[in-house]
Image 1 (tube, rainbow, N blue to C red):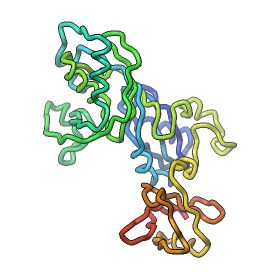
Image 2: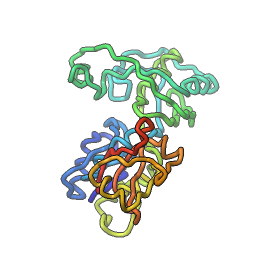
Image 3: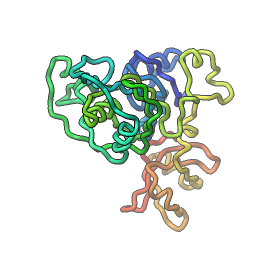
Image 4: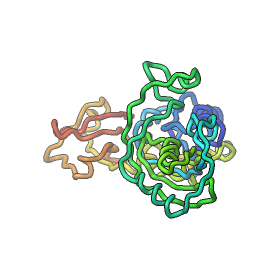
Length: 299
């Protein structure tokens, strides 16, 4: 059962709790998620089962889409609704056009300082453990990209917006930064991850739905083979003579017998498939050596 499950994590459980729930329902020994959702957040969590866990880095690098509710006028120590209020504005009087202009100013490449209440580590210790002891350490700014940011609804002090961003973006930090720029403070009040790359929340499964499907039956929503889950990645069918090399994890030389398109040469991953279409491995092109090296082999 080497599958990827699009799971709709409910609010108030950790991502690891969600993985444990999927493991118990499907009775699998090994499972892992591809990108943490904070306990206060709900939404799409990709869970890899058994050998598919080796593919987790490819999914975690995908862009994410979120729908967020930000509360203006209050900043918290965790930058979300679970934290303690550390500042409060006397009043919040911001017109919609000024709010929209400020939100849109964050589109593009931005720098974020990771929050102290996060799973990032400092000298081997998770930052949130230090934060709980009242210890604050220096955190380097990290570049992230906001591809799209859209104001959806305003009901002061609450602001709904949608954002599409790169891996590693903290939406609560984005809310905190917006609040600072507006001069009133803000924190993340609610969050839903609505998409991970090509995977949409409408295609995800709740725990109840997962309990009632036949995982070995006909194709159903939210359940993907490794090949299906990587369908966004270009594929390369090899010939019979290359099968042994791939099975042993050896690289394939690119020559007159194996020509690559520009798409394959620049792709972050290539699905390597047998002449019959069986998914064998994920590889990547090395221009320096003019080879396709095998990064993850399943053959």
